[in-house]
Length: 86
Image (cartoon, rainbow, N blue to C red; front, side, top):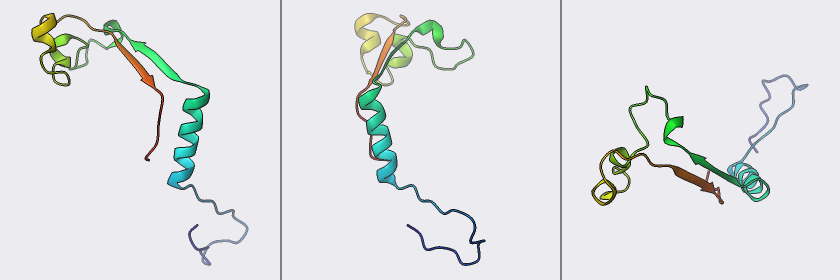
């Protein structure tokens, strides 16, 4: 914990949040409330420069548009089962 600042009013409360605290909170949240959901192509705003299709996702998955076709919509499942290293 940082040293108490003697220039600050003594009636105030001092607190400290460490990276261990954040890691513990994130880990506990994921263990008790798994974060699991789908993102559908229709949920991406039309104004977004990125579309949820094989063409735009080929940036992250090279060759996907070659194998499945150019510009096909894709759904993504997000499943976060571990968090840490903050």
